[in-house]
Length: 582
Image 1: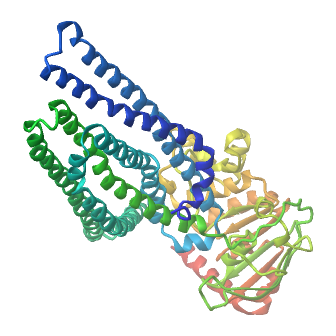
Image 2: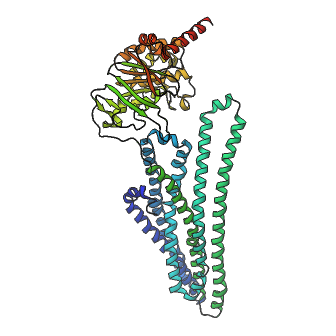
Image 3: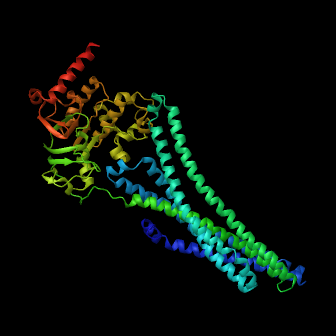
């Protein structure tokens, strides 16, 4: 049990006094509840003994009112102490989980679905919160209230009747222990089905344009229904099991009550027990019913909490494959690849094979190649999204693994292939690298360089225009150009453009390249593209094929080689000529 909750030990140590005080107050509430039956006992006996007078009548309701007030105040206090702490735990653990997931490398996200991670951050955290909130309350009630009630019944009322009333109670413990294990298994199934459902919903809504364009709404709905039905079935299995537990405990408590009514009435008639004792005994049995029921509830809550915590532990135990180093300033940004070889995790195919390439600081280099040749992989390794072996990539004649990941990534401004934009304003997207103190002039300047400023100004809200999910209300070309502006705003020492002009027409591409000349001249630039028109004016071009550099040189040198570069160049010239004829 302790090992399961190892990742929240720090929080529990920090809040131990708050939890301890809450439990003490809860025990006080339990103790106060035991006084009321004693007042009823005294009141009943005074009636039967004809000792109750008008002058003393007010004493009993006043005492009950005082006790009730004490219980009300104490219940408020333990709720503030325990339930608030459980909410703080949820907040703390969610932050810890989010921070940890952000620190993991790209291979983790390749293996884990978004919907599953969302389920961990919602349902699983909620279950852990319940275990350390209501769960603790029910444990204390189940233990202390049961023990104190039974002790008072046995010592202050009638031991024999107490033992008879408790005869059915062990059945509860045995039943709950058996059902609890099944509950944990079924709750794990519930969480997994919810993860699958969340992933399906997220995928469908993100890809809604594709679904509609292929007229697959009915198929997508049927697919969603299957996930929804699986979620329903797993929940119903859990509900049926838990639903049987509550009536069972109530039935056992009722059997105890029947024993008291039958045997206790006989004792009152035989005058071996006073009517006051009998009334108090029934009151104590009613009090005892809740902790007996709490046993069933607490097993359900704790088993859910354990199942969820185990799922969260899998994430928190995951470690990044990226080995970080101490922070050290990077002065020289010459880049060199030496025999760079790489294969993605769980694969046996080399995506890159003995890549040797030098990129002096301040120069621009283009990378061209067929799809799957390893172009983007080079960028992924250079920006430390995946772990690479030692002495394969150097920055400033030093193995770049000796620098911290943060310092390495701070060198780069990247325009990735997918052009991900956030659901916020265009201004915030461009100033993403420092959105807290956004520079308005710099935002407009970088938007002008990427040839998107006029289109933004044409929107009703200009740069304050709010974007939909992933920038869904923009065209592909607009998203690319905003991504370029975002990378330029950072003013990086090394600018990387990964096929970032593929969605714009050739005229717009030409204007962007003209404006980028100054930017490319003032910093190191790595440009990946399928278009030779994008690469031809760079200092050098590397041609990749099946993970190897097969050609390297300037545009004119590669044309004269009559190799793959020249073949692509001829095809693109023909395509351009055909487009002009149209």
